[in-house]
Image (cartoon, rainbow, N blue to C red; front, side, top):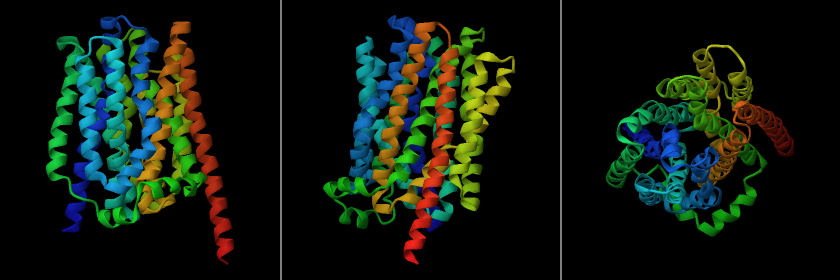
Length: 400
């Protein structure tokens, strides 16, 4: 019975996380339509992605702590309501500033969802199964990205850019109803809540250790790279002569690799460990491929497939590292720290790439920047491995 309930819970969490992913990725496919409709610059368009992550810098850690104190269900319901309100504001907004306000509000709710969801997965699955569960969980963002990049631009062309955004709002409403009535409580949730308080959990930040912050830095730089690519990749391919639909498909290949390979990567992590090596290897290859995109005659279809394969080596290991480094009562805090740094990456990545394009009218420097972010991800992963190995060695010597 426990086996069935565990995987059923993962299905609920998956649909819950999909509300975040669709809201987050709903803008890039309709970026060109918004630019022409509202008469804004590419830098301003980039801020619609960047400002989504802005509130997460400030609310992610408190949101994670609140999840530790009050539980995933209660905070999840509140998060879905906030996400829905912000999404509707974007869908019905008639000016750039209203869209920015809607993205900030939806970011507050959606980014809290992105903390609660992996926390819940970590509570339902034991360490020997966690990699596989996180691998499946991390197909959520690729699935949403593929759907939005391949469908939203077409819907926007026929119905206007507001239509796909309002579809996302409708999905948030459906998930809210499902979550309110059906979402099961995680194992040990009530006991952890009894032992937790907001003040006590907030003070626990000092005891998280450097390793957790290095994992968060990895997540920040990785997202600065891939979110920039997903935001402007389609526009780049259109600028070099491809149709909007094919450009969206080429960009979505980054996520198709993760959708297909992330469960396998999670399975391998359960068997061999060494998450840092998976991250470093994937990031180095990703950096090389992004560097090549605007300056090579290689078929973009092949490049896109390789980019997607390299990118799939990073998310599942990152999410699996947090439960290894923190006790169960601090999982919300740990994923809150990850989300805080992720949002720094979401803020700086698209904003800088969009700014470079406005200054040069060329995507070359933007792809250089994406490659730099990916290479930095690999460097931090190696530092994490060295630091964690050294810390474990010191701990074992102390115990002796």
